[in-house]
Length: 257
Ligand SMILES: [Zn+2]
Image (cartoon, rainbow, N blue to C red; front, side):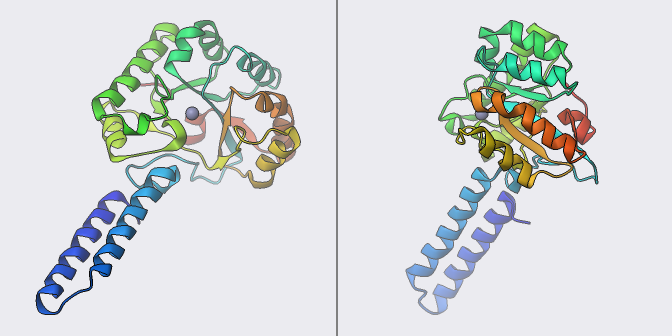
């Protein structure tokens, strides 16, 4: 399996072998560059494909044969769109998972309370969701996770166990930060692209064409198109006899720390 550890070990071994070979017969510098390039490509792959499990194991779907799926909503809460999403979930008697941003929770504690009161799971999606979050040092990342956990606990009484990395990017530093505070990283198996797609029909078919039992579906409760399409997505899941549940229920784990 392609992991960070395997990649580093392979890189060191191959470079060492080339250096040893170079001792007996000249090795063209291009070989060293090629091996370095492949190593850097593996790091890029590991950082940007969250379900690669490159830096740390990330839960991206249920491995069981199941008709359950998890609807997950990132980047909220938003005063404009989260209430509509909650209304739709409530009227369909569906429980979902919200990966909330700490600073937005501070702005809308009443929405966080509502999410919790209506039986949804709340996960941690960092405090700032800063564009350069992936480049933060470990202590700063850990502080983002801790502060967001504290805010969630102050509002709901629960401490999040699940963490979803901003932009789905993982790095060795983030892996250490997550491990050091004992949280569990969550990815997804089905990306809806609801931050890019603006037409309701396209979004519904994007999910509908690929969805299968066990999927963790990535959505955003900050997008108008998501709020407008959610009922149709739910109707489609019902037609396919798929049953939306919370992430902890899908993966049979604890909900909170
Ligand atoms: Zn996000």
